Length: 60
Image (tube, helix red, strand yellow):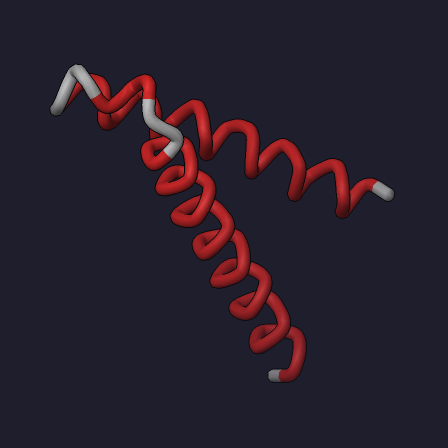
């Protein structure tokens, strides 16, 4: 259950971060869902990368 909660927090913070970053550079992209989706994708990919690194470290 805690793993699901962590991934949910990653998605939420990624969406908010994507909106914040794109609004700083563009300004008009806040109202489209693409910025939130971009932030979520980047956050999830970095989370997957961290998990894979931890799995690889445990094997060694």
